[in-house]
Image (tube, rainbow, N blue to C red; front, side, top):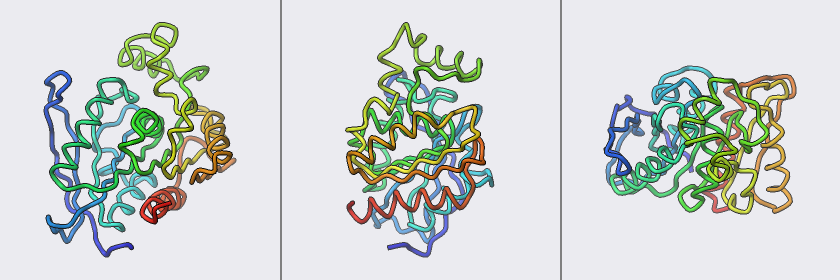
Length: 254
């Protein structure tokens, strides 16, 4: 059941990473009116390449606004972390995400956890869910990829991945495979929504479409919104539809 709430002002927060003692930043937005005694669901939004925690907290473009509006509509806590910059859910970012989710659960009594993100954030959302399906109750990936092998990203993206992953696909194949959701369809038992564009040359939709096809065969709750005429973007309406599918299906227990 939806609630008549809105999100409050963004709070710039931090935690000390248990992995390496570094200070990691994230933005938290609470639903208003705020009642600390009420258990909340949590929506985590992951930024794209070159962005930071403020992208999904402040930007007005469709993906970002729709994520905030969905969180407000369901009275959810809304969090946007830096997750180690251009990490694409590196091992360090993965460890931080686990810690952040656990700390938010302890602080706010979080019940269900949902992930979303655009581009790199979409890939990272799928990657984290594949690695930790026990922590995620629904995932919405907007214009990402589900396989990090045989994919030709921009040179600066390749450079960032080699740095954060600790090597190339040939050097550390298991790191790349662990984050390639297409290899792990059996782990996606939660609701999944994926949006893609037929003219997307940055993150071509082939791998996510293959993942969706397998999930459909497995009779998992999955929604694909594909716009043949669009590129590397998802509009407000489609993002709302995708997120609504994930949240409503999860909260209904299916």
